[in-house]
Length: 329
Image (cartoon, rainbow, N blue to C red):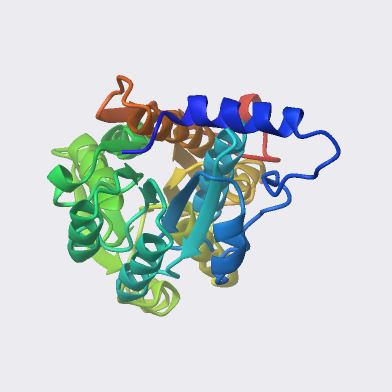
């Protein structure tokens, strides 16, 4: 294992100060920014001494964009570069990109898995070469192959949505659940939601798997032939699609719940005509900072927590002003 990161970083700074008149090829985080999805192998090799990898399931999801930014800004304060790769929701692509990160000899990998189970071969490859993994957001199936997990209390995020629905509809009703079976964090949210509405007189009319079905097409068909009182969405990306379709079909009386807390869904809460009703909110900023601190501790052989679950909470029309709509909480 390499020397402690902090010690090495101080030595580099001292050496630069002693060599007066000579510009050192150390670079700054700004000079060595990595553009998502591009191959920057040569630049990476010549930049700062320490480099970590960030393998993301899908950076088109704003949650992951903010999470990545929080990780990157925290690492920059330590003089560590972050090499970012976007799998664009394809686990085979993610496995290939992790192989590339191994070839680039990164010292740690932050992983948001595209599929919690199918990513196992990549975890085994990282484990074989001794590169530690900090698992983010969605917990992998083979937890023994990661050093730490940093996520949200996803079960509670779903539970608070179900709790609110029960208070609004004490006699029960007919609901649609929009989920994604390959993403364990979403599975946990839906489990929490269903626990909250258990024995509340609710009937699940349809489950839509966003990982294999077109949300709009399936939901439009349902709206034509079924009475629906509420829709629970596994994340805000799904919720935005649902809200758009309900607007098009003028079904504004259906209650919509989601988990995340993006600016788009919080803005929808402020619209009195929107069916957006409540959000089980999480904080990618807190998660990212915590993950970066954990990774540095792992490399420095310092003490760290193996499992960290950031708090989740409920946002609705009554309290959304507390959190604002111009960014994430």
